[in-house]
Length: 501
Image 1 (cartoon, helix red, strand yellow):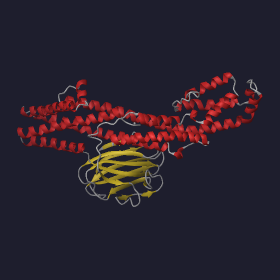
Image 2 (image 1 turned 90 degrees about the vertical axis):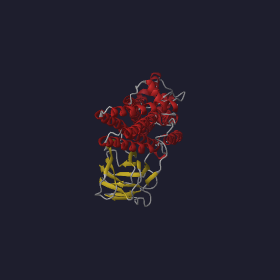
Image 3 (image 1 turned 120 degrees about the horizontal axis):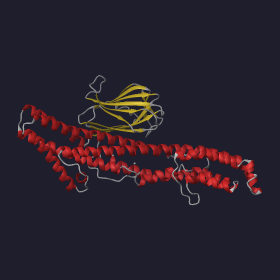
Image 4 (image 1 turned 135 degrees about the vertical axis):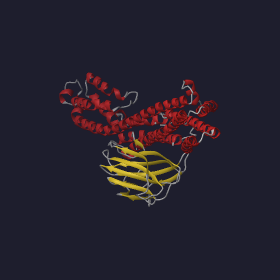
């Protein structure tokens, strides 16, 4: 059983997607609209709900406890399963087991495919993508266990099995056939043909590895997401808002020169007001600023301060009449801004986690590539790695042919020498390396699921109804940045979907 724990990226460079990103036919879809429970049989307490659908008008809400969904009809060639889950609160945890069987009764022989676990800590819809990879006609079952609240499912979809996965299934049959023939007889001619096929299929995984490495290297912040993130960060910078700029201006009016110097030092991390540059505001920067700023503000408008600051009569009168309101406006504004900063900080943390996972994925896959070459008696040198990753198809074909030939030759030499023990070890090691590629398919599914979740949360955080400010000028400033961010995010998401899904 494969276990996935969601680790719960922006225009991306577009790479060739010959193996991974070919459009696949959808064999099952359920968005829970209208009579959308028709595709399912269910056990437990799940019902359609019009509250908080991800898309459309409805989602499926399953109460705390255990529930099961069974597809009413058998699905042909189960490939990639994608669905979205919304936990009721950040304390809600859930466990979803995916199973398949040839019958859709409770007592059928259900085979577990994967388990998804979410241990709380975040709210909002989260994407899950799992490779079921069963070429036969099977029924699909989801066992849903929710704790400390309900969960909602929406937009369930299954795509047809990918060609690369189908080839992998064929590789398993080839290896089984080799071992069966070896047990029955030593027919060198028949085995040689099997060895050639094994060598060709083994070499074919180099192309899959190359594609995944290209994707891993390309999954970085491109221009569209950088621009979207830039606009998003400006929305949490106090300098972007008239209320804060007016507060600064009013405070300077009643401050001595030394107090003005201190004020300039406090707001310097947010950018230069004169040149209108806005810096990224971190949670640490804000925390170090907010309370000391309010204390400074209160002191500045204290009578003992402005009476002894050498101010004009008009400025002293201004301080006396407006000091309390200015402080109250500042406190309200900073509370509104803090809500915005919390969302920005969460998005930044989420993207940083995704990028770390991508880096780990890339490093592990590079090691897998080196092991793949070494098993085929090809040195894992920088030169040979470069040949595998070359943009020139002829160069890639050359090393692929060498790998295929070496695998066939090595297996054949063990057979010719009558060394069955070493032959079996070699074939099993070959099988092990082929099987290991499944974990990279799973890893890539997790990365894309996390990225889809990130896009979803980013988009919801800049929806018009999320505007936290009270004053019209501040609301307008927030919305102006949000419009730009929405446009950049749309471009980035479209590029991501086109290149990687």
